Length: 153
Length: 166
Image 1 (cartoon, one colour):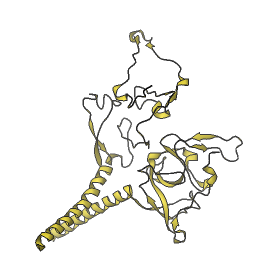
Image 2 (cartoon, helix red, strand yellow; image 1 turned 60 degrees about the vertical axis):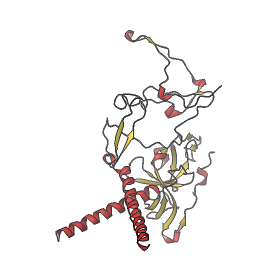
Image 3 (tube, chains in turn brown, green; image 1 turned 90 degrees about the horizontal axis):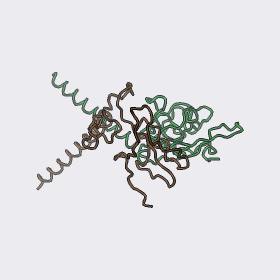
């Protein structure tokens, strides 16, 4: 009887000791040294996710290399979110959400928010020059940028 | 003899790593003690005061107008600044000085905050470098530990007029 009780107490003690060592060390490692992440989206094609939605790349995020904030031009980096509470935005009535095809290189609604329809200037329908690029511009909504919820009129 | 010393060294290193990691987790996710330097938050916080900062609010987006925060400096990411939050995203901020005849305003962009020191004459803050991203905020200072004559919760801003948008 006394022996089985002693077994439980020794187990609990060992568990607590291991827990309080393993969890802080693991968390500190993931925060300060390195962690892994899956890349979502096509904004970094063709370097990352060249296969589109078929296969998502998994990358190593190396915190240790940037501990002194040393980066070079051309490095691929990950950024802390600017603090936006919501990843989803509701576009108000009478407004539109515009984006450049090349995310990140585009000063668009991701920076300045939804745009009032009254500011709509024109619809670009064709490429006229140079002659080898004559074409009608198709209205294409990239599948990864579909609205999460469409407003039913 | 050598094995004994080696064993002790490894144990010491092990304990150092373990307590270092616990300290990192404690400051990153709970809070810690901070020493402030500089005159920009006088009279609320003087040079060399020791204060207690909690780092839970920023994870839950609980930072409000009037809070004193620690943030990474926008011009030098290795150093920290300690200022009061005057405006949150969407707020209208008076950017002209009181002596100007024409008042000019600016809106704080999404994902940013506007910081100002309590000592307006001697503070480099958002009036100088603009609104800073919310992600730079590291914690909220709410309690002073040293000097003991000033022990307790921190006072409200002496510059109450900066909060009202006209």
